[in-house]
Length: 91
Image 1: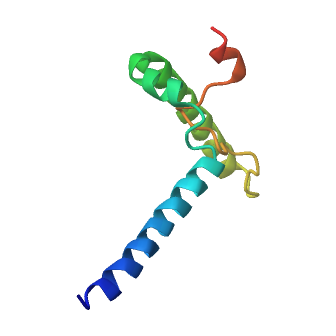
Image 2 (image 1 turned 180 degrees about the vertical axis):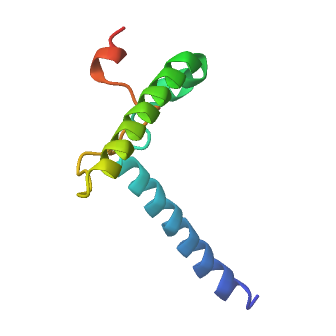
């Protein structure tokens, strides 16, 4: 019976942690675009083309930065291969 004094508070704390993690994921928008995440597997060519374009841009910036003693401030930032722009979604 004494074990209940430990198990009940531990289960309440665990439930609170789960609720906080779920609320944080919802607030950050993790579940906003569920439709596109399921469609990613059907468009490997588009992802491959986008990845090749990103690699080419990165390589061009690296070669430019080697020739330029100052680091290049424009780099690929926050560009995810899985994200679509607003014009892609309407199609």
